[in-house]
Length: 102
Picture 1 (cartoon, helix red, strand yellow):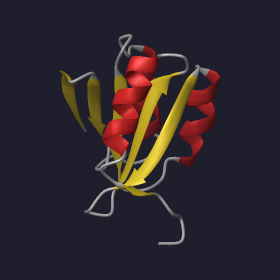
Picture 2 (cartoon, one colour):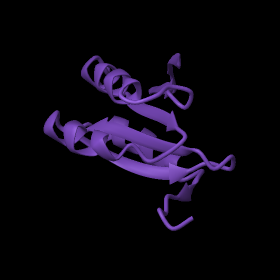
Picture 3 (cartoon, helix red, strand yellow):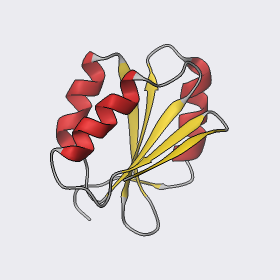
């Protein structure tokens, strides 16, 4: 797992090498400590289905994309944090929409 410090209002969490439930645990920890105005970019080898409901309970919205290497990138921001949402959507737009059919 690797965590990149905030830059441009984003914290990147790479959990692509971890086995369940570690990605979920690390992502929830990162969300709970996410500074205002920042989004979380999570990189995983698959779509983290269980995380979405837990993140929503904590007040987060998300956008899920597929990067050029085929990995899942999920961008999370606190609901109502316009600065974080704008950053997340700008970064997400650089990647293809996620499709479970690929």
